[in-house]
Image 1: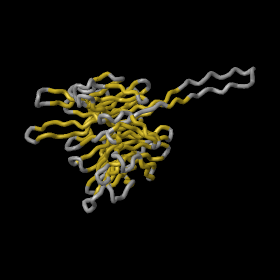
Image 2 (image 1 turned 30 degrees about the horizontal axis):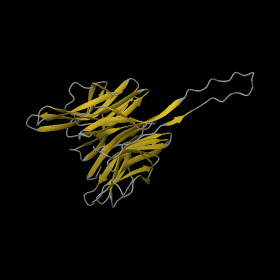
Image 3 (image 1 turned 135 degrees about the vertical axis):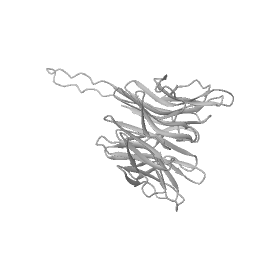
Image 4 (image 1 turned 45 degrees about the vertical axis):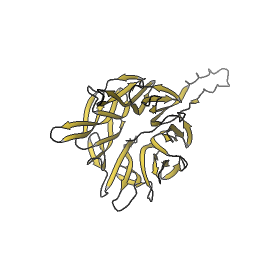
Length: 349
């Protein structure tokens, strides 16, 4: 998957218990002050030309790698005071051989999630209770048959194979210990999702489909977003599926894809990208209403959406600068001097 970046700001919500006017009645204690913070992960090129994995908390960067080798952060999740990030970091074996190593970080410190991470690129991290889930595509070499890709996830380091042949992982969501995974099968040409390992096709009589993100509502409805295309058309549609039923967000003549999805109070929020004539444009949708995040004066893409109390936060990239939007209002995370992108976003409250 392609990935993207942002800048962050802080919003502080102060709740103070109202004091009783009657002096004979003991005033209730003040409620605990709770902070709302915006976390965005991604990567930025340094002066040496290397990509540095990092995340921003309310706009303040936290470096995850030292910048000696290329690295990127792909997904972020915050659980209480703990910040979890997954991604990849290169290691140089020789002048002609470079390994890509899957990485996970907790509060900025690398943590082990699998014995051998050289064939794994983690794309999604999720925490529920005491359990840490990491999803990835795993590449293996089959003697006489070449390379094979499989959809897998790890729960506290224990691997689970979701789809074992010519398939690609894109996202993961966990609700009430149920594990929902999105991905693409048939060498990446057909969208699918899995609920606790049970496979559901999404391509049904369409030439090409791709699934890029998955979300499950508290009631158990499963939402998957992505794109579809037919062989007789020269454009792709941004779509989402609810329990396998497709909903078109666009219908040509330009091409679109939906990259991330979230649901709040039965309202469906989806972000994505419009592919114009030599330029990409950042978009998001509230149900089926499109909101333009960039215009055709600069290229922009989106990577992740998070909804907090009906406010939509979208991470992405504008003109090589890592950014995020709050209900459409732009915040830059980097100064634009060197390429950067935001790939994931999480909001605490």
